[in-house]
Length: 310
Image 1 (spheres, rainbow, N blue to C red):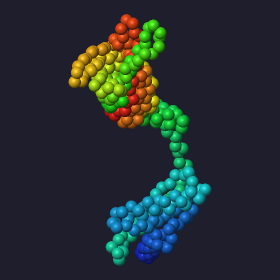
Image 2 (cartoon, one colour):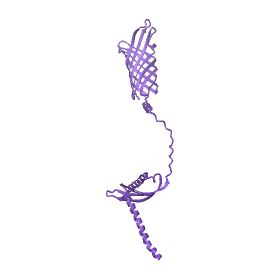
Image 3 (spheres, one colour):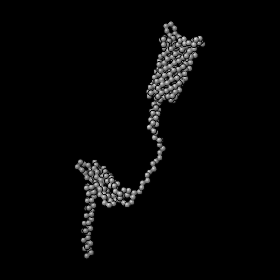
Image 4 (cartoon, one colour):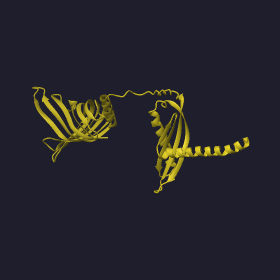
């Protein structure tokens, strides 16, 4: 009798198992086709669907969307937020669409546990030595200063309008009796090893203002101390130098030449642009070369220059 009951029980067990398996498969199919998710007490079945050009890409996208679906549900459920979960894979299938792309379904079952997630300790930021952020005005000054430093140029060459005057006076009445005036052009070159120091060489050729047969040619070299020789902006300077020149008077009747040299003291000002510079200077020369025992004199030279900086 018991043997017959056991035999009759076997078909019932098989039928029940098949029904449960069929129900599970249908539930998995239903999860991904009819709705995106199902919540049942402490478990959530979430599904992701994605389409891509390749099957691998479609599967990956579907998995991410299933996980995102669960996270959205969990954020709105008090019994889920902050709790640990166990993940079980469910449906994972793909099909080829008429356009040749792949459509994949991915199902995941999340079981929500009573244990809460361990609190994550915030990582301490690595301390690095950083310079304080400059204020806007300070930043503008820094940028302006950097721009000037980038525009540093030590050499300049150019031309100048050059003039020389020797003003004589008689010792007996101290009145100005006469003057000798020359004017003409000059070529100059200037080198500034640092911002505040420069060496300048002028080579000039001049003619008497009233007699073209009377000429003066020479050179002067000066050591200058100033406020700004190498960067853009204004410049004020003074210096000391040496001049050497030759006066010649040459016509059809007579030909005479005299050499003069001495010390000179200079005062000048100018302005530097990125590639162009200009300045004006006036120099007081040692007049003893130009005078006799009975005559006093003042020797003055000056130049207005424009040059190229590099």
